[in-house]
Length: 304
Length: 268
Image (cartoon, rainbow over all chains, first blue to last red; front, side, top):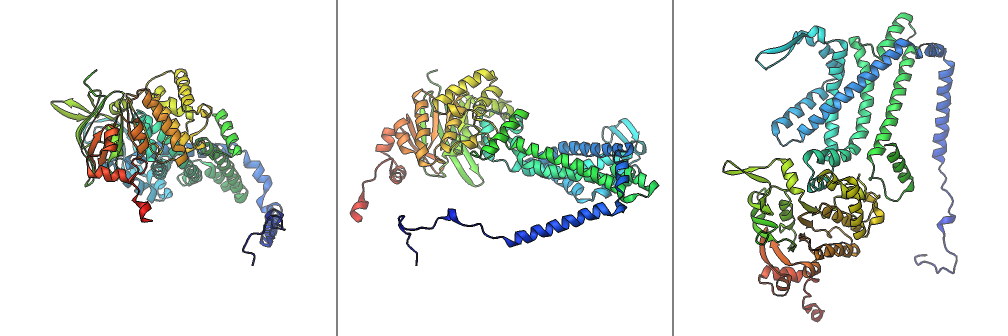
């Protein structure tokens, strides 16, 4: 009936006067969430088995803090070694020399395929398989040699195990990031006379980082939590330090809460760091016109 | 200085799988000359300048810049491929402008232009920046120096890319369909900048579909088809008296090159 638009002089529809649509399900969901939140709060506060006073008592206990330091250190070391090795593995997988590609693919397949817990126990028991570890010419003379039992402490086993797992995951993340860079960028860098190293460091990697950082951040978080596994080889990490206490006092729940709180604190800090890095590497990639984004990137530049 | 061409391409062959992208292509470019390469899509025009710039390895023949063989060195009476670093040094004496601009997105406009002079040619940053500002002035984008490429239109990006290409004072600048990715109304700005460079005596090889530009600016036109140079000569000859049937039919399909006698009118 009203197929033709009305002339402007007559009354016409103006969408600016339209009312908001009623969204009853949003109200329902809001109420449900509020009820659940209230119930949870009630549970946390009124259940004295949480023993919040015990939580407070042990939160800053020196052995707990030293366990926390071990956990963070292990995660950082595993991430650092994992990034370097993962980067090399990614380069190997993208190489045009086939044996290098095969070796890297096999490495990633093995260390990503075996559960980290199994790997940790395995490395801890390396001395059984390899009583002596030595440096020398393969099948030739040795220059130095160590007793594996002395070398493989819980710390070295933990570092080896976690780094191997990390490097395998990060290799895949880095490879995907490098593949995601427009080939035209590589052409442009080479056309400018950049050497392969300059092309990689100044043009390809910064762009790949945009793709690499978000999953690497998740990976860092998962290795941080993965460090809890090392408690099985008696490494004094955060979890192990609270276990030592509750084995003595039997206050299992409050001490686990101590550990949980610290894990959450560290993960939150990591997440904030990750967001900052994401913004840093999105320079020049944000939309042109939004002024909000632009203020962010200028404050970034000032911080960098 | 008299005899030697700035760029010499001799019997170059390049194959991708079974497909011969370049088949025995030879071309000399004298200093200060503007050579425009035309031809249908897939005729090997872009491959030719990518091979000149050593972005693609050639399978046969040779490319010389000022008499120096590119990409290879004489070794024990034969030829041996150069390492990437030395190829990069050879490349740095040429420049290229790409169809998709390929500005570095995380560098500002100014940084895009100064990066090669500073990092590759060892120029002082301050000098490189003041020269870059002059170039930006020239392409009409001095006020965009601190913008990021994504904040510019395609035509602006391509003008920045041209400024970047000439900032290193290359012996020769290669243009790979510089206006093909642009909106029609932005093409003229880019062609205007290129006309200015040609007038300054810059040695240029331009792959393009802009026939009017070819006619007006080229010292010499090269028509390629199926990986071969079919015909070459001054545009006045090539456009008005094409010798080969293939060039005739190619020109007939490009109205802006040679208005086709309109038999269409009488039909309709």
